Image (cartoon, rainbow, N blue to C red):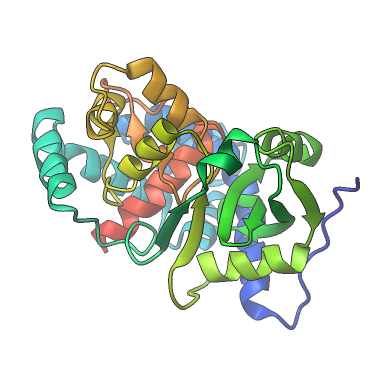
Length: 293
């Protein structure tokens, strides 16, 4: 099965812009990994540029083209978002939002998601009888692997150079399904999700009942904010099931749209993201910038 991915046609300007941001993300991945470990120290532009072997001018230009803001503003947005939140106050605010059935203001969190769980039979049979289309398309956070069921998006993963491994990781989640390559459908989904498509992105949640509970709990965390694994476990109805909750968060097949990146350790550190801490820092930073604007 070939994993080759062709660049989008030049006439599709929105897709070209997505592709440019995707390339810029990969150029900045090392910097984001570095910032993920040091954002609380408020590193300078010179320090960040030196860490990735670029001049401050070139680092600032590429980073700003990808993020839409300077590296300094990006780090400041993360720091400001975390400074607003203590674990106690954050828990109170998020619990109230959860109990009221409210969601945050971000399109990714609110208008963006219309989730529908797979049937218990589909989950039990590990996708048997399901028809899944899959393909590659650019995203602001690198090359994306999109998996689509009849009712909506069933998977979104990322590749950092090993496309075969990324596909195998996604395929093993639904091994009994019928898989068909469809890059055009993937590109259409990418445009819908990341280039201002109208209406919500329909999402199909394929997992055990508790996994689905945890994924729905993650949707309650507003963009620009984070919650601890313990808080997510509480919202999912099993406050002492830390290991099971962590496993459910790690098993989330729909990165970004089901925001497992917003779950952090009690210490506040960025830990445990299936698609890498650099990407987790990138997504949280972009959300913090959007929430602050």
